[in-house]
Image (cartoon, rainbow, N blue to C red; front, side, top):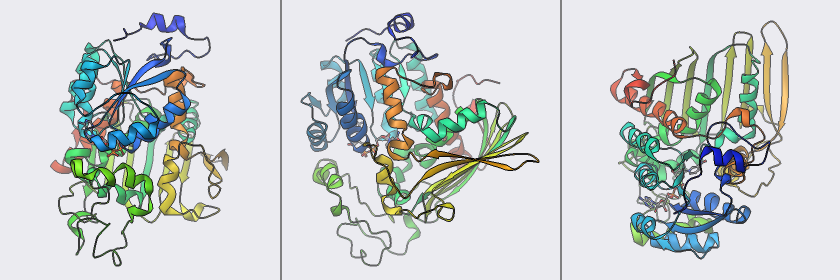
Length: 462
Ligand SMILES: NC(=O)c1ccc[n+]([C@@H]2O[C@H](COP(=O)([O-])OP(=O)(O)OC[C@H]3O[C@@H](n4cnc5c(N)ncnc54)[C@H](O)[C@@H]3O)[C@@H](O)[C@H]2O)c1
């Protein structure tokens, strides 16, 4: 196994101008990094596999792939275009291959055990969000990160997204004076939102509810924008649309007798990628990608409202909706001197309509294609007692607002054009991004406010 570079080695070996305070970029390693992926589903194959192999094979090589589904694993190996060994047992992979960087891209609830094992062997670990799905797992990861010579990086790619980065710059520059509160509403449409309830995300045991699986991105952005720690969370939530709420149900969309009458019918057979990645390998583990949305065992919330209080006094009102006719968000920052706001995907505010059914495919697009129906992002600032000011930014939406590529540039080449923004997320950021959702889930279950400090021994900044 390659030994871990010290911070001093990193600083000495990195080109001037690309240095970043805080965590070291993995790019510090002078040779090609030996990378292994555990979890070869859509994220593992498309981004961590195909994209990295296509764009970064000069600085990294894939030395192993692991997935509990042997069929999907072999598909992944071919689709990524590598001939490295594959493993269905994680420990066997760790025992037999020398790995510099382990990428964890499995089902959410399994992340922590894989992260901890990687760190125990002093391997650098990049984990997909959410870092963990409950507070006990979170504590275990924090402990392992503290004891390891390996570095833990959490793939919180939204921070790198161009719009979200610009907002951070405005806030840091005091554009609305002292920030006092944030209004944040996230709308998942009836295609993307529904897609979560078709598979493991709808079961809290696997995804921790969307307050953890999905909102980890949003809570991380809030923590980062605000620049303080979340202190207390009070939330409401319900499951009133998906799951047992429908009068009829079937086994799966593909052969459902309700396909003509169910507005949510999704014909997976029209998507060859889905067929190759999931349908072809169902026999191994029974993972049904087009499960019925009306399954009675669905137990994740489908509407969520969360109030968060921060250590610097900022308060947040956040909602997530999972069956909206359109996909997007509204975001407003209130400060002592004015208000700054932005939005995405709100049809009444858009020059041209977009096709809601294909929007999520565009988000995952790793080829940088432009999507002409969406012309620009807009940030509107209005100082108190003054007129408004509009700033238009190029519309970047593919690859998670461009964040995937910028995060990879930083991780594997050490390139960061905005180092002062500290976009790389480590264990503390990963923990706080999930602890808000974990607290919100508990608040809903127990009808009471929950303090972040009561969940783990992570020291909070006052
Ligand atoms: N950062 C982002 O923007 C982003 C986007 C999509 C997904 N994700 C994250 O990536 C992860 C994977 O999501 P996905 O959509 O690819 O899911 P998926 O269901 O397509 O893939 C998960 C894979 O993990 C495998 N797996 C499950 N448990 C395992 C274990 N213990 N050991 C080895 N393999 C195991 C499954 O067989 C499957 O192939 C999730 O954590 C998700 O939150 C992040």
